[in-house]
Amino acid sequence: MWKFLLVSFVGLVVVQHILTFVYIMGYHKFVFKHRPGKCKVLSFIDYGVADMELMPDGLVLVASSNYRSNPKIGVIHTFNLSRPEDGFVRIVISGRPQGSFHPIGLSSVCDAGSSYVFVVNKQNMGDFIEVFELSMKENKPTMRFLKEINDPLMRRLSDVLAVGPDQFYVTNQAYSLDPGGRLFEHYMMFPWGSVLYCDPSCRLVSNPIFEPSGIHMSPDKKYVYVSLLYGMGVHGYKRDPATNALTPQTDRSVSLSSLVDNVFVDVNGSVWTASHPAAFKYEAYEKHKRILPPSQVLHIRFRASSKEIFEVYSDDGTQLPASSSVVFYRDKLLIASRSKGMLLCDANINW
Image (cartoon, rainbow, N blue to C red):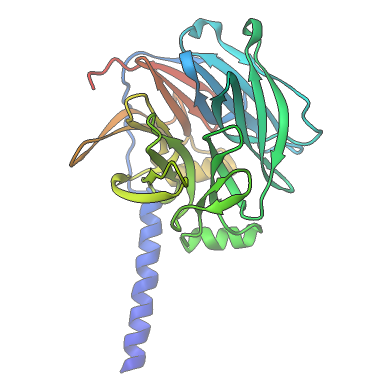
């Protein structure tokens, strides 16, 4: 009898696991078009955009690369939301050692009149954090290479959050380094992802989480938000400014029915996410480019005792496939695609 119960229990666990993963893949979903206002497709290079960083005065850093090429080819552009007619300007990088450049995450910080840019560079031999000094003299952006940072705790990096010229948080999307182990970890949904704090040596500051992706901080620097890709949500943490430790906050966390790629926090402390609402289409496009993956932008406001979630943008993939990152600045919404293309929308909404 006990053998029958044990087999039944294991069978139920396996079935539940399969059904959970099928739900995550989103086979049951229908995606409809929804616009916050007038949207314009921007001319951009054919590379997909992995991440964006909003700086003061509406300047946006755009990290893009052709990740299928070998060696990996990547570039960083600027786009000014205060002067969108200027278009994209490629940043000239100097002093960087020879090697492939595949920027998948970036963050910036200003200190003593200087601007520093931290970049997650995913290379064949491993993932690294590269630090640059940004200059905007005569409106010609340049980045001067300062150093490269690596640590044994850095596994499969996804995004970085700068908090000082030598201090930053970084997300480990997974633990396994070999492809087979990575697939096993992914399909078993093991919560082996993590958030590290580095200065520049690293230490673990988060609870175990399933596939963390983007990371951003509130303007008052009290809260850190981490997007979960296949975890389908956003985790909020209270930050200790003295130790930089992160404490999970249930009232600042939310579960969503989309793969959350990157997260952005605006000047009001509201959270924005760029998401993939149909995971199976996203994966099919990544592997075979046969299906246009849909896009979704969500806006989350945390109240004293509640959370409000608004769908600001949605598309079936024909206008903008695979939304990867979003920034909001003065009623302007800039949305990036992991495939290719950028979208600038008017978001004249009474929040």
